[in-house]
Image 1 (cartoon, rainbow, N blue to C red):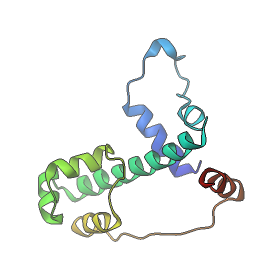
Image 2 (image 1 turned 180 degrees about the vertical axis):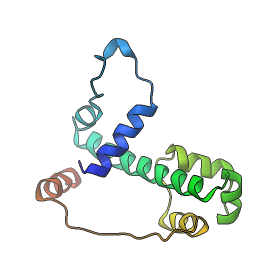
Image 3 (image 1 turned 90 degrees about the vertical axis):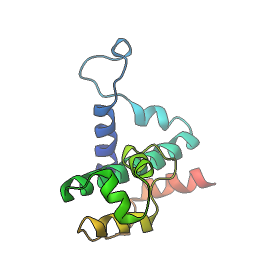
Length: 131
């Protein structure tokens, strides 16, 4: 798991209330271990982590620009409830590239995408999952 994915999971875990009876105080919830128990679980975990990361970016950009959800939704041509869903990361697919670009532009930001070579172990795991 990359550092940014780990951050998104830690941030999500901090915002989520966990039943204390099942956990030792101060220990992180083993979500990656649980999700990675099956190839399908690992794929779902990666997908949801990406959705939560995008949700955090959208919320951070909007708040930094000083917009309400309603204001930003109007600027990018969507509804406030849909923008709220994107910020909560509750959708199964996350925002489209076009929507991220519209949001970034409206908030005075530039959206940049970087494609980098994955570490060999992660790449091999993705190939096994896809097979």
